[in-house]
Image 1: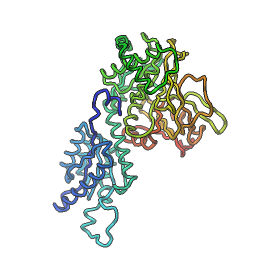
Image 2: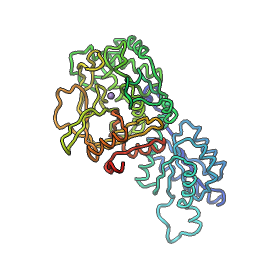
Image 3: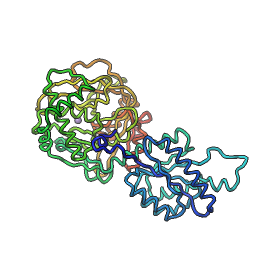
Image 4: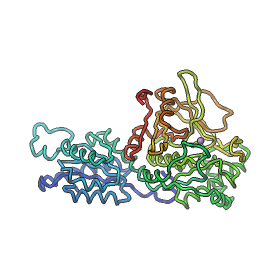
Length: 486
Ligand code: MN
């Protein structure tokens, strides 16, 4: 569940996806009646498969340029509509689609399928061929999409096959994430960390391309909200912590500071309708600790976060959480920290100075208070835990001046080989794919940041589709990567 939903009580909304069937008016009424009947049956089957994610809406068959334009304008104007699925039951001359496709601003899946799975060999005649000619009509439609430069996902196969349904579900996940992204508000508490390059970026271009409204807020305004947090509100937050975390410190006063920070940040985010935030240890005026526990718990509740003013990682995390909603697995920000460079069995230790999301915890996290050697503030309370295992991806967004690039690497999260009793922060460890030398070199050549969103819920294919539909350059690092091919 997205944090924004819980704050704003908007959980009841259901995103819709239009299913648009193409035909033409040359076949006569009888054929069009059959086209409508078939497509309704197909939509009702697919709607059942998608019902937990989106509402699949059957649309009347389009038969000419006006009906194409009408339905595409409707999809564009409908705020609940996150995407469209187009399918040509018969031939549908594609010049009639030009005005409609030019008016369409929602992500498109072109479903290349048929009403019938198998050919009826003993009864097939010309009427059957004219009615069921997606092989013909979808190629005509594909041509005009390519000619117009329409970003879309083409999914080929019988619509009842599990692989086809899975691809449609992926499209729904990505379309919902893109809809969430469009108009998302991101708050920067403090600016980008001084002199750091990769975390900076063009906020105007981010809003043009992804819809992110990224704005700076004075930390003093949040400090005022912190000052007004009551003891009762702090008590309630402490009680909430203890339902999920164990106290492993006598310094309760320091933990209560984090509870106050979190109560204040939640009030601030609700008031400003914020889905993702950044902070920086270089701008903590009026605060006694860097927010640690507070940010960790907020991330677990679905708030995007980037430290040191890294708004791109923060916003990307919120978008990827929206994409992964309802799936099993963990998604949050992490930082590349240090390596075990044992030859041919290299491992990476990922963490941050405090802010590692407890969604990555392999057992119940402990609340601890330790000094922080950076920032010159009091020892902050934080959650400490060891990380989960499993297949994962790391995704980094960088700004190359004239375009954004996503770098996506496959990882294998592993159990740490030995305890690290003196490490006062949470951590994850992973193996690189295909190997350390290839993956780390490729990431560095591609310009990937030291901050990334790590997810065990999403796959390279999800990120590939997001990149395709948003027109973002993508570099994938996986088992097929070689440095020469990169
Ligand atoms: Mn960092």
